[in-house]
Amino acid sequence: MKQVVALALDGVMTYDLACAVQAFRHGPGKTGEGRGFEMRTCGVRPGPVWTPNGFDLHVEHGLELLEEADVVVVPGIGLPTLPPPPEVIDALRTAAGRGSTMVSICVGAFVLAAAGLLDGRPATTHWAYCEEFATLFPSVRLDPGALYVDDGDVLTSAGLSAGLDLCLHLVRRELGAGFAAELARWNVTPPHREGGQAQYIPDAHGRMSDGLSGLAATMAWAAANPAAAPDVSALARHALMSERTFIRRFKAEVGATPRRWLEAQRTARARELLEATDLPVEVVAAQSGFGSVTALRTHLRAATGATPAGYRRSLRR
Image (tube, rainbow, N blue to C red; front, side):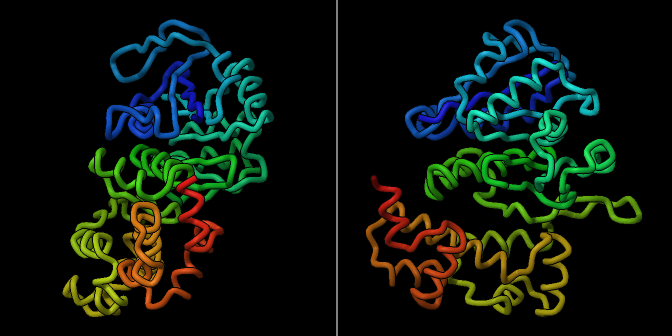
């Protein structure tokens, strides 16, 4: 059982904290307990924690709880450029040095960066704060467009809902695609958005992207059954667009090519089938949209480092 500890500093953004709660504590069958994670929340010390959301939180634990954490989650705070207290920096450094996985949501990246835990590493944060972040922490390899960045033992997310994407990604990484998909359905959210998918950032005229308004139906169709979409031209036909227009719009709105996105959906579906069924690998390859076992093996190895048989064994120990 992995121990997840969320650090609620004064000014904590409760939406960010709730993303971690929904992923690691609540879900199908009551909570994440018994499914690989146990989550608790701490502050600098036990007692009230001020939030900018019109109410205070009450936490029962102080920083000593970080000593037991396998995963430390740092939600954003209302004034992210303020340096965290020295005891917070010390506790985070100690946890990281002990081998805890360090996770930030939204502008929680400022806290990890202030502790020196992002120096020389790739990271992201909310697009609106990227300029300030880059000025304060020039040694961090900031990716202002990513939804989230997984650098192994340190993971960072962009703003707000991207925090749930990152938490689901970590659940998928630790417990497998099947449980992550079940948890995503519980939260009524897409089961998988790639970390490299673009944030919705204002264009040069200050307009926000319209999200996935023109592509949502096609993406939902293909994600539900990747085998029904053999190639990008099939996606374009479903969206009632020319292939050239579809590719251009997809890259602009999603931040990835349609082919790369479709391969990710196929891989996710293959992982679910390998985890939840005893179907032969040839059938898994066909039902997930791969043209051959060789293609399945290539993409699964790139995503997980394992062969289909090895991946199935690892999730059934």
